[in-house]
Image (cartoon, rainbow, N blue to C red; front, side, top):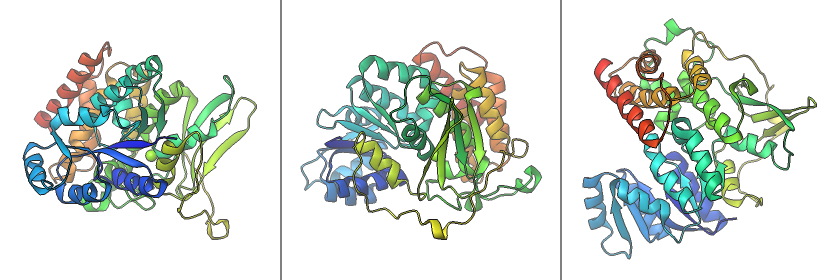
Length: 380
Ligand code: MG
């Protein structure tokens, strides 16, 4: 179990839940970072008293410094601040809850310091998963997934020997528009897209859940985390979100992890692993469960998932380009500048134009990420 944590992205949905888990576990919060929600950040800082806070946005950092002038806290700015929050000697675990590819560099820096990574930033593994996992292995840093599906798989694999795993059964609710045709999704608004039936999440991941891109990103994340091939992962639509994922073992046994859909559980486990601690979360009540149902994913009407699976099979820069293009397209959709179905169009066009090249090193990956963003801004 860890003693002190650094929370990157502490004002987001996962960040806020991480702080409440830290409070109930009695963990020290040594460092925090946020982008620009400084009112909430100030409230959090006054409560948790970290020694270092990074504010990504420069103007917001100035205001924040003034707001906490009476406190004994150092304030950093931009990527430099984020890097310091990720590597602060006092924290032995870094919770990477920032959204998007901005999480990559700080994650690598924290790995170099051999900190436990409680990984909640899936874009990092999608963009540069092979590199990140190889670095973690080389340095001996633990990576414990916070994403509920990957936490479930991690738990199903606990204590298993090498060669026992046959395949991963990655479950997903199917999102708020499950059952609809692509043509019917044309005029979906951001307000409709962020209303997820089971999970309460940030805007970007909510839209990704609605397009099924989130399941696609998780598909790639699972490949990297558990060192499996694309053909060893099967996506299973399970609308109730009670089973958080499963593994099939070589003898045919299937092990599932079940629980209420609450991110507090995987967050807590990432901080207490290899131990388990009592938690205040709601318990699964089998008498009130509706039927658990399962179906195949609809790749025709939700082509983002198919695109991600294709990118996973292709390797190289394809996944990174897709993820970066998707990130920009989702933000344009949230700002009412792009239609719901165009998110796929933008990601697919970017992969077609820029994704068919090898990902030789970090530099190449970061360049491809920027090129994909520029491509979507120019063409969509
Ligand atoms: Mg998930």
